[in-house]
Image 1: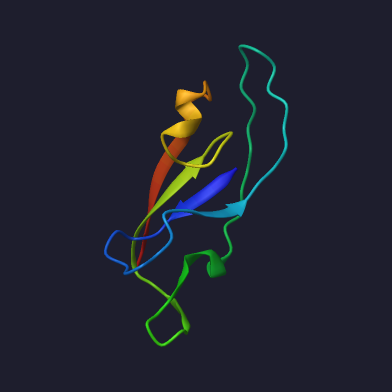
Image 2 (image 1 turned 135 degrees about the vertical axis):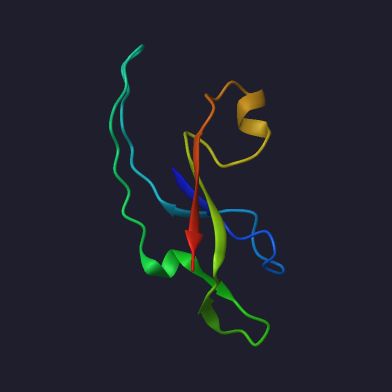
Length: 88
């Protein structure tokens, strides 16, 4: 699952949005390369007038087996891979 978290200063934005996913099998003790292509529309937010606009700022990228948050790790999910993307 590939989630995008919006810039922290964007008002009333969702905590994270699922933007892509793939079902893969990873054998125990091995790694698998996965590629996600992020569309430009993934970086839009809704402004106070209800329009979809590209919002500049630093976005978080979370890739893992469950949605971002404390519950999945508490239930035994492995830690997700994380990164940041800066949109100018």
